[in-house]
Length: 304
Ligand SMILES: Cc1cc2nc3c(=O)[nH]c(=O)nc-3n(C[C@H](O)[C@H](O)[C@H](O)COP(=O)(O)OP(=O)(O)OC[C@H]3O[C@@H](n4cnc5c(N)ncnc54)[C@H](O)[C@@H]3O)c2cc1C
Image (tube, rainbow, N blue to C red):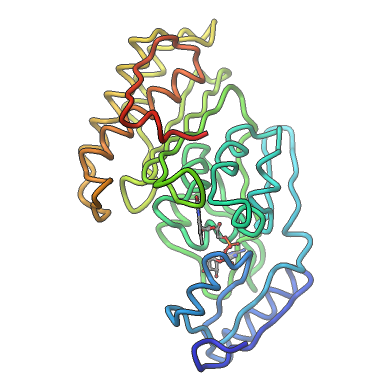
């Protein structure tokens, strides 16, 4: 494999064990390694010379990474599962919603869960959903299998000889919603996104906002408000509760420093405003809070 004049050794493992061995071999030989999932981020970076690895481990033939499973309390999604695979997955409606609004059909067919985590884009749709879902990251390395919380994974990254094998998240225990505002209606990443997950058993609501900081952010004050404001026996809330929830999200976003560059359509003020509107709407969808605020400035862009 040639990357901007330099030659990278290409490995094509068929099992996770082989992939780990190949990573270790390349690492021991002092070669920087990139993992190739669907290549939607990596291939352009190789072509432009932004990435110049000494070795590439292509994961496409590793069938065990493409498995999805359901246990009594949790769902497990292999790192090789694509957005298209997730888009129709009825066991996780929120994950399916997030996968459906990713890029174009071509990106959804190729892009994988492992690649979304490896790239960890501030506007990554999966990342916003997984942040709200308290996901756990399963990894493999020469030291054996391991697991990390998503915040630890995002803060510390992976060891250079490790790969993500799967993501584990709790089984849904109530309605879920995922909304994003994109630059255009197709093939564009989120400007601002919002995931809301309701847990009717534990009387909890989780909310994460993407596109306002370097990584998606949990809206803990708004979450605590929801705990008190929702009528958990009916699984419903008032429209004023939805409005207040949106205001609390806007307030939290306004306290985030200027971590992301502003653009003509994405001033800090727009991000703050859009986050509040998305959050109020996602809350309404999950909790049937009829009459929550609708703003035509962002309404036209909201997907799905
Ligand atoms: C035109 C376009 C539109 C897009 N639109 C969206 C969008 O709307 N929403 C969105 O969220 N994203 C979007 N993306 C980004 C992209 O599709 C995702 O980030 C995708 O999930 C990357 O997955 P991949 O399998 O293609 O990763 P790759 O490109 O193969 O790899 C990306 C990175 O992850 C690492 N990696 C791959 N697999 C693993 C693994 N198993 N363990 C650890 N690290 C790994 C690689 O080493 C590399 O650093 C878009 C991209 C393009 C080009």
